[in-house]
Image (spheres, rainbow, N blue to C red):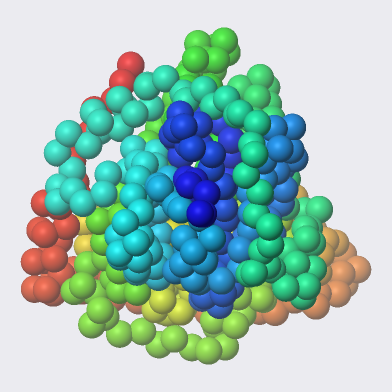
Length: 486
C-alpha cells in the first residue's frame, strides 16, 4: 500500500522562515514532501529570462543546505505541474497539498485551475495560503488597508523543522543536463539569492544604509547603496513582506531614521496594493488597464525600439540605465520610470512592445508590480497623472557630474563634465580643445518636439468616451480610502 503523505508546493516563497505551508505540514501527523516545479512553459514564457531561473535555483540550494540538517530536501521537477501531481499521486497516497496563492500571469492562473481540477478529481485537498495580504476574489477594495495592516502586524510564523523520513526513490522528471548547466551559472553582478542574503540586506539597511534612503532614492548611483535592495528577495519569496515590515518598523534605529524607514514601509504597502490590482485583473499583462487606450495609435519605429533595448538611444542617462540593468538586474524606481516614459512617449511606442524586455532584465520581476507600474508610466490607466520624463533634466538633477553615465557608457568617459548630459552640443572646436573623439550616437529623437507631441497625444485621448467610462469602472473597483498608521 502506498504511503500517505502531504506535499508542500513551493512557488514564489523560496524561504524557510515565516512560511505558512511548511508550518501547516509540520503540524500534521503525516510526513511531507517539499517540491518545486520548473515547468517547460515557464522557460518558454515571454517574461522569463535565465537570470530568473538562476535566482530561483540558487535560492533552492540555500534552502536545501539548511534542510539537510533535518534530512529534508526540496525536490525539483521539470515537467508540467499536472504531470508532476499525477505522478506523485500514483506513487503516494497524497492527503493534502499546501502552497501559497500566486498572483501571477494568466499562464500561472490557468495552470493553477488545471491543478485544482486534477487534485479535486483525485480527492486531494489543496490548502492555499494568502500571500503578503493579497486577497483572492474581492470585487472592491473596501477595508483592504485595514486587513493588510492586520496581516503585517500578526506574529511571524515560527517554523521549526522535524527530521524527515520521506525520500523519493527516483525523480522521473529531472532538469536535463543543458538546463542544469544554465541554472547553475550566476553573474557576480547580481544580488546573492536566498533568505540569508535577504536578511543581511535588511540588517545593513536598518543599521546604516537606510539613513539616506529618502534623500538618495531618485539618484541612480547613490540609491544602489541607500535603497532597501530587498526587491528580488520579496519577488521570489526569500523574504515575506511581513518579515520586512516588522524588521524595519521595530528596529532600534526607527526613531532616529523615521522618515527614511517610513518611506520603505510605505513602499512595501504600495507593492502589495499593485499586486492586489493584478490579482483582480491579471489580463493587465496583455491589455491596457483602461481598455479605452487600446485604440491609441503608435508609430512603433523598429529602429527606436532596438536602440532603446540596446542602450544606444543617444541619451546618456537612458543608455546608462539600460546597460546597468542588463548587467546587474537592478536600477532605482525613477530610472525605471524614465526608461518606460521615453519608450512610450518620446519614441511613441506601444507599451506592449517593451514590457517583456524589461521583465526579462529585472532580477526582481514581479508580474503584479511590473505590468501595473509599466502602464502607469505609459499613461494607459486613465486615472493616474501622466508623467513624461525629460531624460536630460533627470540626468542633470540626479547624476550632475555624470558619474553613473561614465560608469555605464564608457564611450563618454573622457567627455568634459559640462557636456556629459548633452554630448551632441560639443562643437568641433570644443572637441579639439578637449582632445576628445566621440563614438556615440546622436539623439534618436528631438526631445522637446517629441515630448510636446506625446503630451498632446496622451492627454487628448483622455477625452475619449471609452476612456472616461473605463476610468469610472477602475476607480470603483480599485481605489480605496487609505489610512496611514502612525
